[in-house]
Image 1 (cartoon, helix red, strand yellow):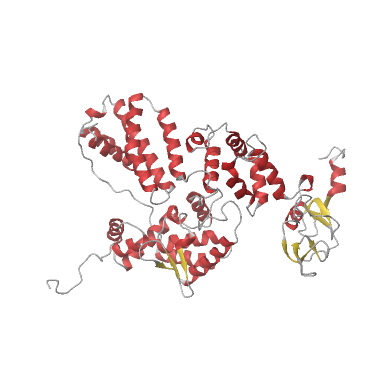
Image 2 (cartoon, one colour):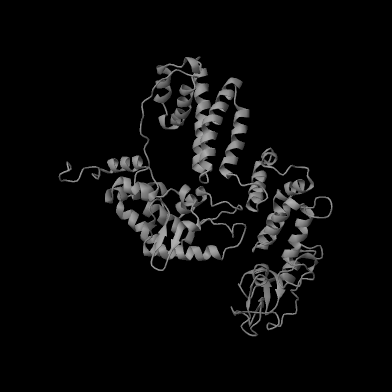
Length: 492
């Protein structure tokens, strides 16, 4: 409350009004066709188009009359306030100093990216131009004022921090470092690296530093370097890593450390591990301890422990939903417009094609091939046709992506996230589907069972991107019989 008002009652009596546009009682920001609240004012100064009265393409902050939804320009609405930037002449939202959002953001970027000579460091010019080229400048300004990213960018511009992945990875605030690295990679300042791989390397360094005793840390370090990191780097060369892939690697490293600790508690070293020890380890909490088997195989191959065996046990997935429930959920996702478009399409990809959300969020706009007659999805090989209702929703989503704004407006992700160059987190999408009553895991299981009962398991595997052994196992669990030979003479 301003010091000019001695009491809250005075402030409310002089400034609190009922907004003529939304009807909400709040502090007025303008008084045009009547009192305007701050929310409606902000919307008005970010609305452009062709004025229906004079036909000019410009800012449309006014309304013809109170309660009218038709937006018109300031001249036709008889608004006396000026919306032209004092520097560039752009008509729009003006901030402190009567500068537009773009000029205000440019000033902040110039100060932040100054290399000490009054100019932007040459390597960071693409970053500056990319941020200023964003469609949602309001979000960029809010991000610039609230995050710690500008501090790191200033250190990079001055040369206090080397402009390398290694230097950024060594920062204590890993979240800020990760945001800066993604921003620099997105604008081509740093060479592109897989985000999930970077996060795993940071986590591994911290995990090994906390591991005791040192001989355990050394052994786990060798396993992580030569087995897990090698596998992740090789996979990242072909496609972006999914969070589930790196989470699996974390589980393997953690269970390897747990197994060494368990042996030490039983006064046994890895090189003296016996079959009885291995059986005792797997006898309890098998599903939780199973990730340690990757470490056991590596230790046996490398000669760190004797060659032993263990019994494979299946781990159970959530029970599948009934077919009529699955079909009811599909109908709801197709017809219920109260569910956001993003969740509707993701849910249909789960319930129709048994796709995991970790794979759904990795889809790009190039994985949706559209034509006049049909829409095809690049899920497996060959391309998978999309039924009519899903095709219509995909057309709508592609149109929304083309008109999108923000840090990912120019990315190819079908489900873009908030971070520059990154897709939506599959956990966030799963939580959103759960709020709308879509059981992701059991729905996937039900969809895959129905598909393998309708077509041969190897065909389903190729079309949906699964391994044929997995679909064959699902077929056996569902009681299918596609693995039988067709009748006839097979001798010719």
